[in-house]
Length: 402
Image (cartoon, rainbow, N blue to C red; front, side, top):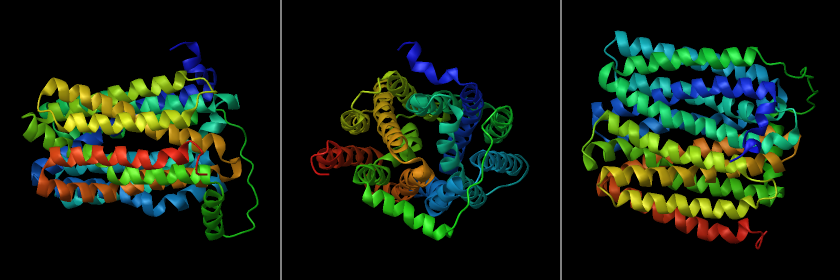
């Protein structure tokens, strides 16, 4: 790691964005950890854990293509500002319900659906706005990698803090801290000096824009393969964390703190992977690295599923996070840096659809399987599937079948 690892910080707008998002994302991970834990403690059901992930992420699948088109047609800054404000309101409502009412799981799921809809518009706008935030376009790849380090630094700290807060102060405080954390990102957005937005004339309907995005992916197989790969991994492998409350409680004999620490260990590995990506030279063959990352991801899950020792579980969770983060971020980087500027929002919307849309379906599937064969065996199966998928896709990633 050297000074070039942080070269995107030379851009003032990106520094502001990074600082604000870092604080906000810690709150986001605190809320996510608290939601899953209290749902499991109320229901003791692997299926309900899967359903909670489904409620949060499936709306992103339904609306992400519309969100990508909105990001291409309108001012991305204003779209992002609006989604952050609505997300803050959602967190405040969640706080009030949990602290002052005898809430039910149904209410938590409803608010999760609302957040999922907001995220469908937030992700394409936020991801594609990075190109405007950095002063030098050659720093875009570095900024994307630093974004991943930011997300995973938050994943490292947020769940660990959430576990402690859950045990001492309760879930309501987790949700309140998340609501307050949005002040940081909203303030950072308002302090930016972005280029003046120039509206573009749109001569065709939004549905036509959506079809053009799909046609673009079909006609650019090097990008289409990446979206398909992410879709399969998101469906079959990425929902592994859905089972963490069960592993923490039943396999490791722990409590909310252990659950938080498991998520934080994933964050440690992912943060290290993000720093590695940020340090790479532009000449690095990211497609080969993607293959290696997916092998590490699958291997980490296999090892994690086979241990009932706390220390080893932490180590293998970190390895899993390392491979997972590299897998997701490399695909994101390749999509953003090789797609045309006029199609970037729609390409990112397909990325969001693959990432956020397939996971909830997979979470329901994984939760159902775990109900019958148990969480450890389900995690082992997910690790095997990851290795099989990357073995099938390797010839396409290396350009031998494109």
